[in-house]
Image (cartoon, rainbow, N blue to C red; front, side, top):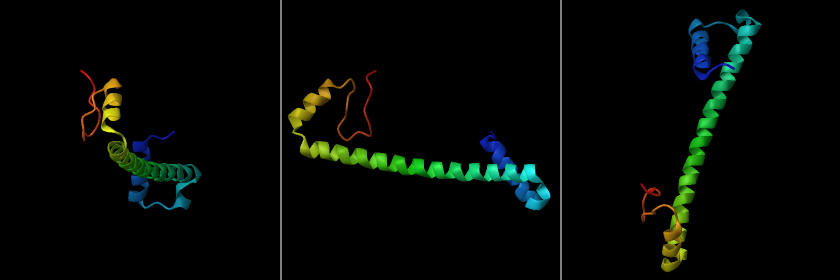
Length: 98
């Protein structure tokens, strides 16, 4: 399998040389297709990952708001004391003991 940097270098080389697909030969044209597909797939996956991370953060924020609004304070505090981590109010995330 062609590595990401190798695929990008191959794409750049073909683009700089302005080579025709017909003049490249079967092996190089297939290699170019693989490199381009790899590039498109990588960009798509990076975009999907960003979307998932955004949605995850949004859901975490909503869960925090819901927990604070709907869970009685004494129940919430009792539950938080049982956790093996310290949760600070409105903190960006849990603080591990240490």
